[in-house]
Length: 77
Image 1 (tube, rainbow, N blue to C red):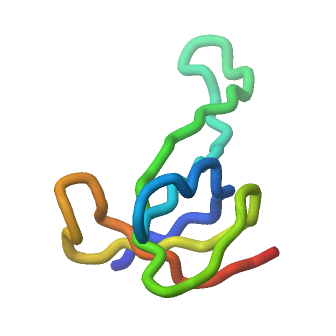
Image 2: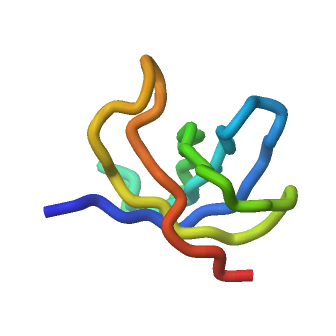
């Protein structure tokens, strides 16, 4: 099963790499209030031309480098 996430691009300063911020809402273990949790994942862009703030889909791949395990599959906006 391949993991896929939807997130927003927050940085494009690296070569062929985008930093994607993924936000999820989880319930607090004791109080059950919904809390926002964010993760920042480095994803390979390939030859796509992307802009800051775009919504994209990323999918898990084999390791591309020490910190990159995801690849951009689709641009949503």
